[in-house]
Length: 130
Image 1 (cartoon, rainbow, N blue to C red):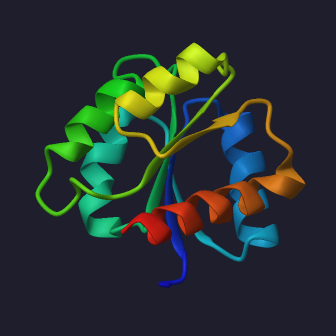
Image 2 (cartoon, rainbow, N blue to C red):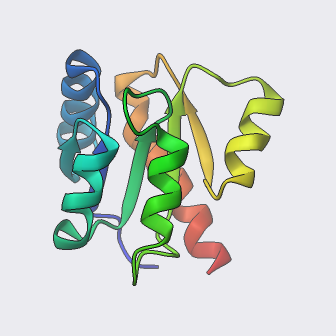
């Protein structure tokens, strides 16, 4: 299994960005590129070439589902693993996000000490499927 190393994290709330980035880098030993919008993610994703993308659902302008759809249209990124991070975690909402192509959904608020483990678990499932 290839090792998860690089994550593109798309989140518009600065406080949440900082906590997640610290958690993923310090606890998870991962390289994280933070984008504050879907538009920024689309402009950075090809050059950064992440192993996995974490997407906030509710963002001004381009929301998470729209961002995912646009990423899927980029050459070489149609199969990149994506997980949503959201407070919308009712079973029907989770199913909806998965139907859009997300591997999983991480509930907000998240536990900073557990975030890297959650991401690694999603990565493991992705690699077992592919």
